[in-house]
Amino acid sequence: MCHWTWRSIVACSVCIAYSKTFDGPFKASPFYGECMNPFVAVIAIVIAYFCGTLPSAILIAKSKGVDITTVGSGNPGASNVARALGTKYGVLVFVFDALKGALPVAATLSDRHVAYACAAAAVLGHVYPVTRKFKGGKGVATGAGSLFPLHPFFMLGALACWLLLTKTTKKASVA
Image 1: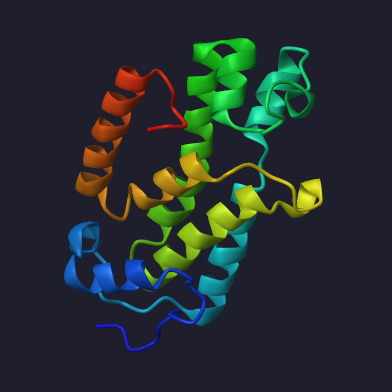
Image 2: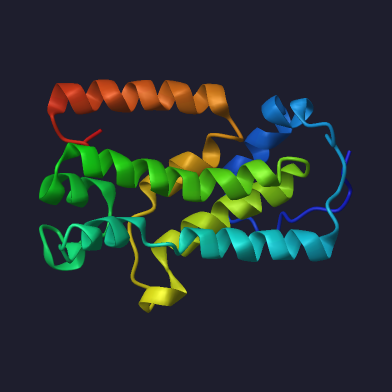
């Protein structure tokens, strides 16, 4: 097992406690239990942050000639894009935002502590992007996407609950 950890970097102590009891995708990794080089780990976390700063909602809305920060709630997220441009574009933004979190985490699954730190960095990059003066989205899709490689079965259940509640209440924010 890895003796070098990034526990002080990861803000979510619940995630760390949960990761000790469920190794799920980590055991599937050919490098399970190996420690990542600290320099590589820091680079991975920085890359995860900058992946989170990519403004997918703003880029997709701008390609349709809409400034999403001045329309609806002003939030650069999937729900606001769906209200302004339609469900198809809202789903596209949701998928891109989820991938912003999932890809850096999936790349670092060999060291679960670095993977959790990358998940936190991607969400922080989405919520506080340095490229937009630290004013970003809510981080829901990026957070869900970053947890999917870590706990796929849990996230599939959460997705099913979210879809059911969204269908029932007709509001994604309630779900």
